[in-house]
Length: 151
Length: 309
Image (cartoon, rainbow over all chains, first blue to last red; front, side):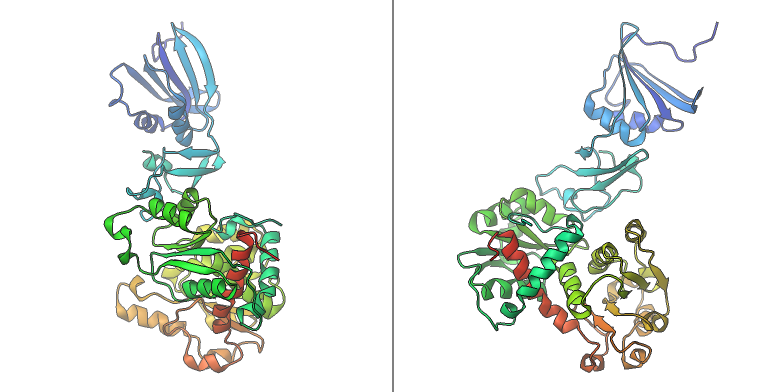
């Protein structure tokens, strides 16, 4: 019998097909461990048909769409599996929307969207979905490392 | 083509067809801009001129454009005398201007400020420069100058010289000239080279810009030499600044290498990158270029206000 490296979960979310090495960034985006006290399992460099990948399993938490958008920014090929009572209740691939609002901070310190005085959320236009390239709606700058800019 | 209510934030918001339309319409404004003909096209229209940063040409040419077409201007040239000083947001200032006037012109030190202003105003917003970002009306008047002097924009050999890294006019201009398929050569000190994103944009539009450090070589077959100010504050020491400035000064000796029909442009203000003796030569177009701000801004204001004859 094939040994399972990571145990199945009863309820929660499995994020599969994360590019190898990016699982830690996904945890950072989800605010884990700060936002969750439940068990989290991480498998890195798992062999699959398409080469190596990372997997994250979060128990007792179903991701909301805002969190999924964030994951698409650093793991554009990831799939989200919502698990209920050990069964896959929902399965979908992350999908970057055409605009990203309030998720990434502009890398330009003098961009108006970084001004605390102004009543606006950060806003980015998605230039390319995979690999993700985004451009600030206000100042048109593209952040070099999106993961570092996630709010 | 309908521009009524349109914001003018970035040259990238316009297609080549739209730019051509604006340039042709600007041409019709030349007599009014010179004061040779009078029009009350903007009669009853009120412009808010909000300058959060210093300006000479942009502010005065907008005011000239409005006044010569019979409109009126309210606004400020120094934010120290406004509620900005009390910590008011740009968004709230724009909401006020929007309720007081029909069109808003804004210059602000933060990049993206004009885009933000447009979100909070029903009236059209014209970006008069946002930090190191965009300055679309300058870009349009630069294109207009090349268009009127050279009869066309495409196929000209254009040299962009000076601070290509921080100079906000050259980034938009390189993009716009690439839309027209002009030949581009960039001349700058190594530390002030054109950012790779701008070079990439030119390439995506099918233009492969050349880079050189030799100004003599670059001007040899150039049709247009666009000079920008090398900003002293960008250099760690005065000696390095002096060396760079000396290497890129445009003077009558350099013009010996140039074609007779070379035109020299500069967004101004200049410091010492163009020797005053060049002013007297037929190559010097920069003061005419500054004047061209008036017809182009006349055209833009009447187009966005929907009062075109």
